[in-house]
Amino acid sequence: MFDDLNQKRDDIVSSILDGSRTINTAEEFQTILQTDPENPSLLRAYGDFLVGEKMFDGAASVYKKSVGLFVKSAAIVPAILSNILQWGVIKVSERECRSIYRALHDIKSEEVPAFNFFARMTYSELIAVMGELEQVLFSSGQVLREQNDPEYDIFFIVSGLLRETVDYQSTKGELKQFTATLAENMFFGDIYPLEEENLSPSRVETITDVQLLRFSRPDIMRVCRKYPNIRLLIMELCQTRRGSESRQYSHIVRAATRYQLQTKVTLEIFPKEKNENLLVLKCITDNVSEGGACINLGEKYWIGSSADLVGRKAKMMISVPKASLSFEVTGNIVWKKEVSHDEVTHVLVGIQFTQISEEDFKFLKKYCYVGDGEQDMIYSMWESYIKQ
Image (cartoon, rainbow, N blue to C red):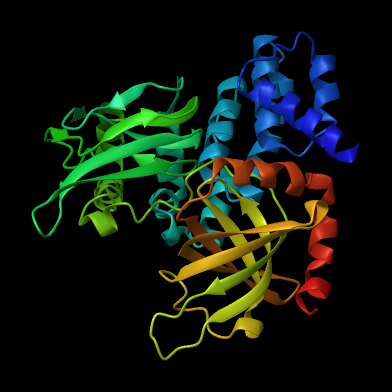
């Protein structure tokens, strides 16, 4: 019964976000919001609805709330879009984005190139850049770039999935192809040097409907004339997409939209050297996508030094108690960060799956989803579980 209600709620929310469901009144939208009041994407969609109804004050308030919720979950690019939409419906003499600016300096932004780009701006520079970003939408199945097409823009991904394919020559001279999935908080586009024509090294196409923020060359040039530091930041951002095939896509963390899926896992982290021991940990996932997972390894002192975890191979044994089943997924650790709460430091890692079947992922979504209202209960269970 509980699972059926969750699934029905998820289906309604998904249909609103993908545009397949039409809401006719603010009252109807508010009723749906009550089922998932802390969903920032749903709140932003409600803000869009209120703008259509010319209820601008209400829209501004809703957009502001969605900014805070996106920031709370480190979804910086979606937060930036909500902040820009808020600016568009209120008349103020001075724009502000203080919550985003603070968040960029509180998180380890160097781990995500797009975050690092925004985090290294002064407050005035961030306001100026955000003022030039334009929301653009594309439906699934569209080719946005062919290899060797001229590059005119940088795109930051708000939501949805894209596929990027690049042909390259290996060190042995063999022609190979590398395919990556781009998702929320990532970016694509290489327009540096700004005064030269740059050709796309890859083919980019949409897998799903996508929301993007476009930073076009003319707008970049205009901002750079007033704030020369932005030119340096653009150069360094574009450089993260260059290099050998092994480094060119180091910015890829997840290959799909994240879902808040909490379930028990046993994580095996393989050693880099033969004489080192296998690290085996009992953990709980924080969020999972078809491309990877964020996993809380627990308190820092339980696992010792976590400095060299990035780059290691790992295997997740996922247990689903509701169904009395389990299965294994292999992958690589692609990022690590430490978060502190109540004077306790936990280690979080991001794992990019080598492969997970569509059937296994659908199974996870069905049996492991918990709503925002249950999050506190999950985390209060963390310490008792991890010490078992």
